[in-house]
Image 1 (tube, rainbow, N blue to C red):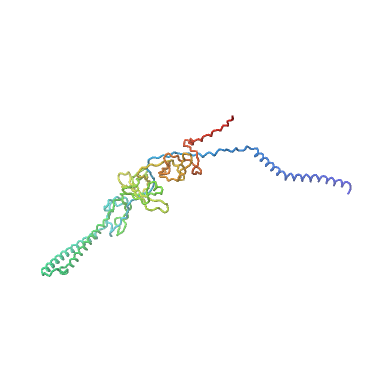
Image 2 (cartoon, helix red, strand yellow):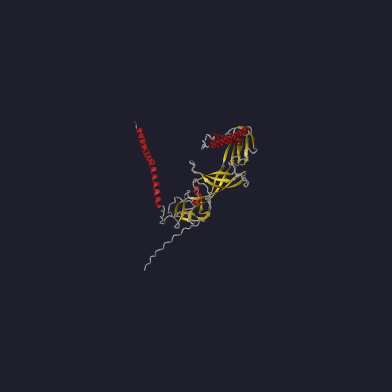
Length: 427
């Protein structure tokens, strides 16, 4: 190796040493930079928290929450209740023929909706056979009557002959008592047969069992009918009933027990029945006459019966017909003094928050006598003049202090007396 080569090798080694040192320093700085930044951020946050203004602790107690209240007022009122139901006749019957034959005549009113009075003939079955049966029965009665008359005469003659012999009391056979009894029985049987024949003849005329209207006609002239064959469905028009659902709260507000039946002493609540038909409002007057003696197992309801008398009378603008869906307003039998408050005063349908004189909450469990969209009425639990909370109160508890505010927005809380300053007097 010559001298020139040695010089070039030395120069190369000299250049590689600074480059290796710079690489190591760069790698150290690459790892150290994030750590330096993180430490700086932590230091800056510590400095900010250390120099920030500290919140001053207040020594005063927290201010009681503000609530709006309304004053409850007592007033004479009558409890009313709105219910709905379907009208149905109190009496409805399926009329059937009682004798066999062909229907030969029907009344012009024997149609769907036809009106009949009690006992009026609706249709007739061919009565020729029954008329003949009556004639035969009357002839039999005449024969039996003649036989009885003859036996009575023969018995009287036998009694006279026995007395003429002077043998004392006559035996029954001697005076023909058995023959006389048989003749009397024969006459009674003949008379019974005559009544049966006359009854069958009368049954050939199908009559209305009560005053009412025909709901459905099921037989026409020319039809052959027999005993039990339906010919029409008829309903009475003297009384119409409306079956209405009542809850336990409804029964309590109206003071009606389960199984109630109207009497002379308690006629039951009056009912104002209304229905809209053909765009017009029609009204009828009725009364709640009874409640069923059982509770529906599925709905837990008790059904009451509202009775409307003479619903087809001409004094009504329209008849209360079966099948009509109606509304009924039940009214209590007497006026009573109740305490009224806004509807919002009743919380969860069972609680009222009363603001006491010390501006604390008195939580009371109550039962409303009646609830409407605007107000609630109480028989007990709330007194006249008491302040009841009508606003939302979160997490209420007994004895909780509040700041009562009337609806005008003015606070009615009594301001606390300012403490007197103690003066340090030095001589």
